[in-house]
Image (tube, rainbow, N blue to C red):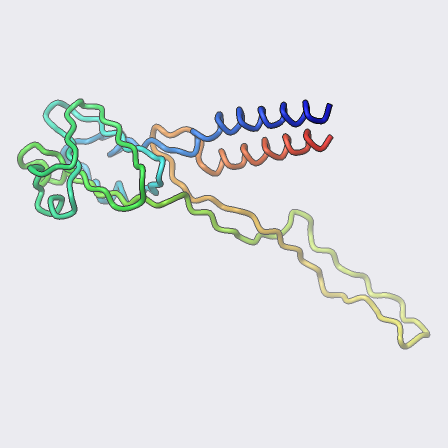
Length: 202
């Protein structure tokens, strides 16, 4: 009977992970509501985001524009003649599959020099940092003991005892089209895996 419960629990874990995993990836609409167009400060836009492997860039643009992925040198020179990849479908989704910096420009003459260029730095994974926080229960204060006639007897300290518990904080921005944030998804997944673990023990 325990084998049946174990198989059922394992199947549940697989289903839950499949449901929660896509929430970790974020689709970033380049330029947010302005899209891929003239007159947008893409340097500032990119600096306000945190890009990780698994995320995607979504370029939405008119037929007057294109998206060209280029090298660092071609990015600086605003040259699309040696592009790595070029798109003109007006709704381009580009997966960020590895860490490093990627460069994009508009291939229409004069647009890149007018500011239609984007450099994004992709990190290997969302940053998680343990952060100590005070526990939810208030610190206890010891009450001084009544003096004893035995001088060798210890008396409790009157210094409050604060307890800290490490927690994990996830710093991941969500794009305008993103679903649940990475932090929320990790919390849900942690709860689900814990519940399955308890079910397997019972």
